[in-house]
Length: 278
Figure: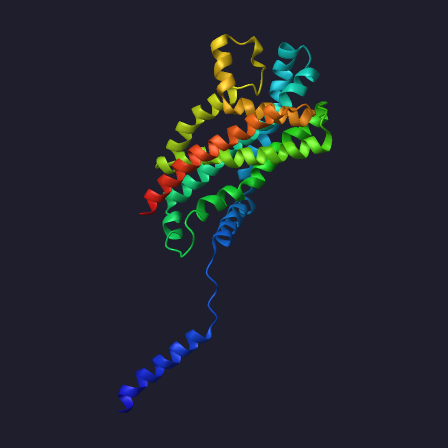
């Protein structure tokens, strides 16, 4: 009699002890996305050298293109800087946004996402949170060349308001563009393959645009390519915001370019991510 009741008593005591503890609330979509955003920020905290592409590359491009090509393109480096600096801010966030895809591809190759999907959370929060967490990187990548440009003589006609609007627009653009890279991160199985395929796309997006040179002197066919490049519309909008000359049409084309990246590549990324979760 004593032998049969002892395990039952111990089991009841264990269940009582467990039920007495307050269970944490289930993570909602917002809290889950913010948690993954904080995870991205912690990566920067523990591996700060990951920010080198957001700091070193913008400084290097600003100095190199201004002093190497400024005089040849615009007559003086000062005149070229007024045209080029808004473009190099777009260039910097474009190249920096690739890191979102690299980070996702590493998580997939290491099996981290396989562990995350066992959690009772809203699945898209893994992607959305990671993209939000990279916003700090985009902000640094867009602000650093602006500060360097100020030291070199860049003077924005739009003032502080124009600068703030340009920085906000660049964060939106980088967030929307990052879905292009997350799509490739889901399609490709290794970080090496990801970098090998996306690098030519980065160069086409950046160099076949009006980021560095005005398209008026280009051949007709190349002018058409540059005009169709969404990066050109983003650079034109940022240039107008910084100089205080932006028009409704330029700003609308910039927002349309952002929406195109978000709708097209965000949709494809969602489909690929859903298939991977099955």
